[in-house]
Length: 338
Image (tube, rainbow, N blue to C red; front, top):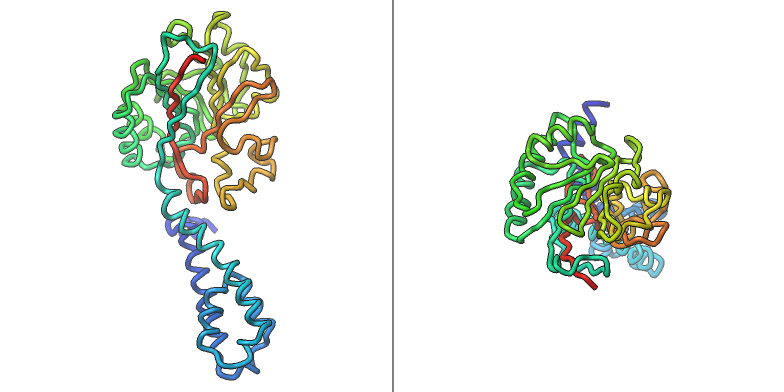
């Protein structure tokens, strides 16, 4: 079993499914071209046509001169073609856009944001996982051209074979006026991760917070699957009139702890659903990643107290699991009072 897993890891799930898809359509095409159709049960043809073999079926129909051109076969073939096009579109998206990191620019306005800090730029990256070092180098190069004031990391690195060390080393090359801060994720060994961060000048937030500028307080919590997040403890040092930004890898914590004194929360964890159906995160409905279904799939949502919360899809690939209509991203917030 281990050898099979290693082979799949090297070959890739998308590539493996693509091979299966091609074989099914080749077999369907061959069946439609069977010289003596009486030896081929129509139910078998229908099965393969509807089992992602619609492209092979439509090609087979073009060369077939028997009753497979009848209305029942035409209807089944048309339906099979529609079914077959769905994985084709998803595979194409997974092999192209879903492997290309996008840079999302968002203007965030709050009456609590200090007027003197208007135009302040905060980049947020999360769920780095197994991003290659050269991929992280490219991200660092692009972010260094975007005039960042602050870089925030939402957790989840790959701890296997010390891969996280290379990721952190490349992240540390990103220039941000007020530094780089980060929290742990559920896949992280926090003690090893925090030690590596500190070695490269990145500040861990460990149920702690700090004033970044006058009137701007940054806080970060433990991951709720790893340890014991405590939002109240993390924001203890904030002043009454501060704008408070909270980092929490898992957004679920904002449904079970008070966030009434916080003005913006940044999270990751759900990957936008990772494998979705035209962007709809069906996987999140299982309840294994979040207890709140699609509420925390992607983009802006609200905590239980109504605090605005942004969930990023994350930036890195998750081992052999492909992203499908869940494009990786770095999010850059430009902050304004209002």
